[in-house]
Length: 302
Image: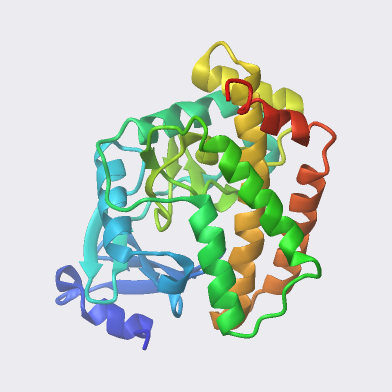
C-alpha cells in the first residue's frame, strides 16, 4: 500500500528535525505523484510511486542506480535519499523550466538534446536491461490478466512487431545505458539540459532512445535525418531504417503501457484515449510505403 506524502516525509532522516517544511504538489505525472518539499531554505523533489508500477517493468533499485550515475554526470537531479522498501526517490529540486515542444524541436536544441543522450549512452554499465519487444509482450500479458479490452485485429500489430525484431536481430546493436522514456515532461533546462524520471532506464538499443525522442516530439523525416547526423555524423540508409522501425515500436510500447494502466492505475488520466492515439500512430508508421524497404535494409547480407 502506498504511503501518504506525510508518511513518506516522516521516513526521510534529513527532514526529521526541520523547523520549516512546506509541501507542494507538482503537476504532470501520469505514473507517479510528485511533490516539491522545501526544508529550511533548501528544495527537494519527492516522488511517490504509483500503484503496481512493477507491472510496468519498473525496478526501483535499477532506477536508483541509473539516476545516481546520471546525477554524478550533472545530467540528472542529484539523488538525496531513497525511502525503502517502497523505493520512493528524494532528489535535488532543479529550478529549471520545461522544454516546450516548439522549442525542443528546433535544430540547435535537437543537437543539445542529442549531446545529453550521448552522455547517457556513454555511462558505465547500469543494472537491468530494456527490450521494447519483451516490454510489449509483458504488457500484453498483464493487460489480458486485468481483462482490458484490446483493439480489433491486435494480432496484426504483433505480427509486424515480430517481423521488426527478426530484422533487427540480424545485426543487433550492442547494449548501452539508455533512458527509454524521452518525452517532453522528462526534460528541464536552464543553462543546460536535465533528464528526469529514470524508471525505465536499462541497458538497451541506443536507437530506441533516439526513436523514442523523435516519436514523442513528432519529428519529420528532415528532423530525423538531422537527429541522426547529430548522433552519428555521416548517416546511412540502414541507420535511417533502424530509427524508423524503432519509432513504430516506441508507439507500440506507449499504446500497450496505457492498456496496462487502464487495469492498474488509480490516477485520474485518460489512458484509453492515450492508448487509442498511439495505436493509430503505430498503424500509420507500419503502413508507410517505405516500411518494407526499411525492413529489407537488414536482410541485404543474409
